[in-house]
Image 1 (tube, rainbow, N blue to C red):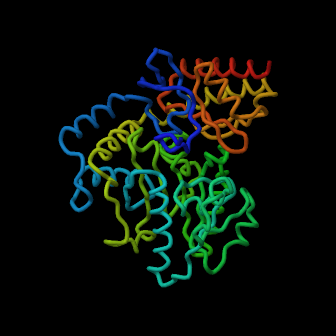
Image 2: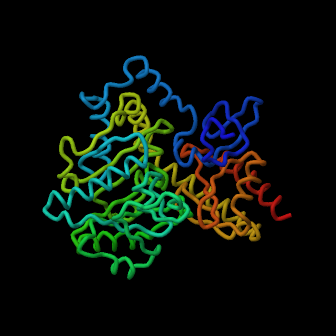
Length: 390
């Protein structure tokens, strides 16, 4: 008999009752150090007082009106995100996949609006992940995502990760945009070198096509900048963000330049819940914390400490961990042992991690993680590695 909850997840055997900062606690009081952060969502940890206050205050006033009317919190958050980024305009969604759907539509509409409707195809990269809708699994093209759901929507082409010549050859008269994650998450925490992003920006300009970034996982402070692409200086035309921007409340956004969004006029896109007053209250509270002058430098300092500890573990347990990759507090352990075994043993030791492709384990602590918690996490991971090494 099928479970009342559709069995599409292989869930870990724990039941969490509450969270405090970087910690999750079950009904019996057992505590796990959460270095998965809800897959990079709980950037400010669990039950952050500023987020709790913002949500509670707004919940007592107004939850939903739809986008038939002006939403002051939405206007404020959009203006602040524009001021802090490359963008001129923002569309709010409930999730990352919705933000990517908006990005896809924006890129296609750009060319149609400018008299080139034949430019509708998009190029993506091996190992990418952009969501679970039909369009976004077709965009990523991974067999494990598309199998059994065909035929796939047309319009998406794929090139090997890091193959510059294949990318150049794939651009044709129907190409509308190139879509890339500045740091691949699900694909195994693979950063795109800064010079490659700059070269990609030049290539898109050369061919008159748009550059679309997916910063759903790597954005919003995760790498030590508000957005990961800032390290390269290569700005996109359109960008999807989500996860951390709501600190755990469902929220996504599609950012674009005025030029790229010119075709997105009234009636071309919409969302019933997107940008609702509850989400906007939390989103503004998250940004308050993120934009504090000392916040992102502290993320970079914590990242340096965590990476050093992880590199030490890789050196001590080469039969378990081959190396460390990633940027900021978006780190990956390239495993010699099966990554699912590493995650399970770490969980037994009271540390929560997240598996990824390429036999990698993601280490994604909340951005508020302390030095003591980094050291505690490293010690628990050391116990897990020792158990696997025998």
